[in-house]
Length: 146
Image (cartoon, rainbow, N blue to C red; front, top):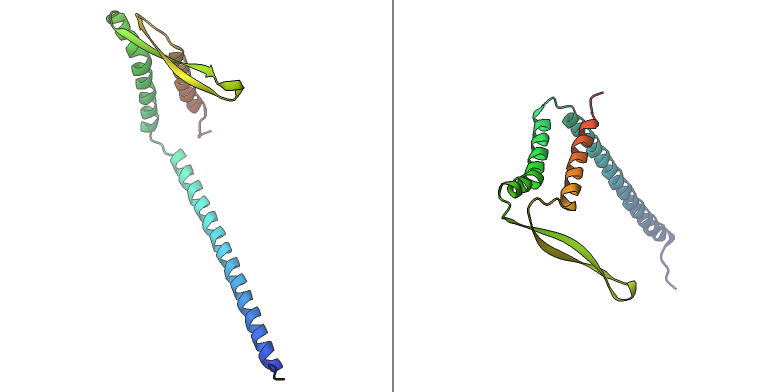
């Protein structure tokens, strides 16, 4: 019976073992590089956030104030002024009404539209105004410069 010489068997075994160890080493090295890149990216992100927070420009605050004031004016005040100046204009108010489904398994929202005349304050007005005021004053209260 012809068998492989033991030198050839050990050569094949050591070649397979060496190549598998090389593949494991390459996988570990790749994972190490990915982690280094992630740490470097996080460091760059932290630096850019710190630079953005420490900008001395007052234009950013002015822009935020103008957006908040324009949103309040055109969403809340302008329709109210139009209702006062031209009370004959109809105002369409939409509100959602939840309807129950079959055996408490489902429900759906149906929007009901109603036309009103005169000065109307809807729940949407109050929710939107409170959200805008909360966002504006909440961001103004948190100061990045101690």
